[in-house]
Amino acid sequence: MGWGLWDPDRLPLGARGERVAARHLKRKGLRVLARNVRLSMGEIDLLCEDRESGVVVVVEVKSRMVDSGDPRSAHPEDTVTSAKRAKLRTLTTALVRDARFSGRSVRIDVVAVVFEKGKRRAAIVRHYESAV
Image (cartoon, rainbow, N blue to C red):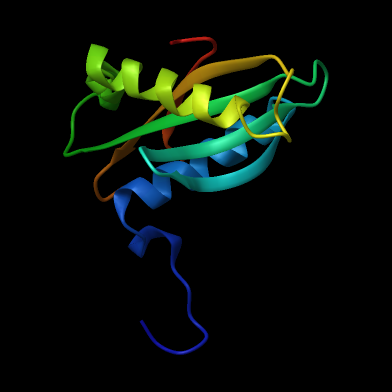
C-alpha cells in the first residue's frame, strides 16, 4: 500500500467486518463507544449504546468471506458456540463492574457480516439483538 492510499478492502477480514457492523449499528440508532475493548479475559468487538433507551450493547461481530454462489447461504453467526456465549457473558459481567457502566442495562448482540470474494458491493449484514 502506498503513502496516502487507504483501501478498506485490504483490511483483515475481522476488521472489515467490524467496520461494516459499526456503520450498520449507527444507522440503527446505536452510538459506538469503543472498538476492540480488551479485558483480562478477552475482547469485546464493539461496545455501543442505544441512543433511545440508553442500554449498553456488547456486540460480537462474526465475518465470513464466500467464494461465489449465494452469499446469503453463509452463516458466520453459527460460530457463536455455547463456549463463546459463556465468554461473552463473563466479559459483560466484568464490564458492568466498571463504575461507568454500573447500574445500567446491558444486552449482548451478534452481528454477522458476509462478504463475497471479488465483489465490491455492500456486504450482507444480519443483526441479532439480545442474542446471548
